[in-house]
Image 1: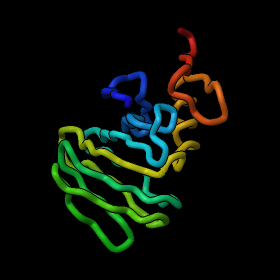
Image 2 (image 1 turned 45 degrees about the vertical axis):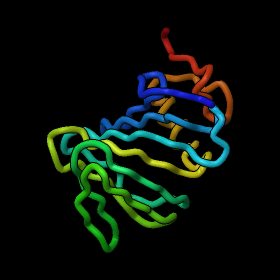
Image 3 (image 1 turned 180 degrees about the vertical axis):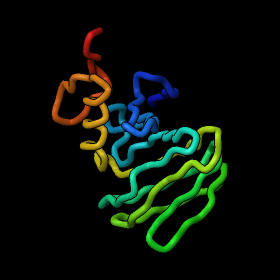
Image 4 (image 1 turned 120 degrees about the vertical axis):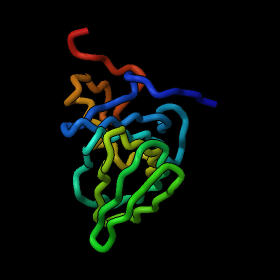
Length: 140
């Protein structure tokens, strides 16, 4: 069993200010899926795009919307969204408080995204697959 909590050691910040907390991953024993908590700041948004993998999302904080090729739907806490692989989508915060949601993806599906974000945040990656345990912060 592995238990964790939201903290800066497992958080990466995107260029647009979104926070991604890598809560449960293969490095701490999750064999099939990775669970992330994503927080989009006031009036922020994710990039618009698609990925080969699916997303399962559960909204827990704030209000926002999901935008896709044929959809624009308002979201609030308690709502769930399934985004199939290769479907274009974007998450948008429509309020002044943070828009937060749990996002589950297949194991390793976003390893390259995670590695890029960690490098931008000043971390040295200790292996080709991003290691949250044992990473080192530059300058510390």
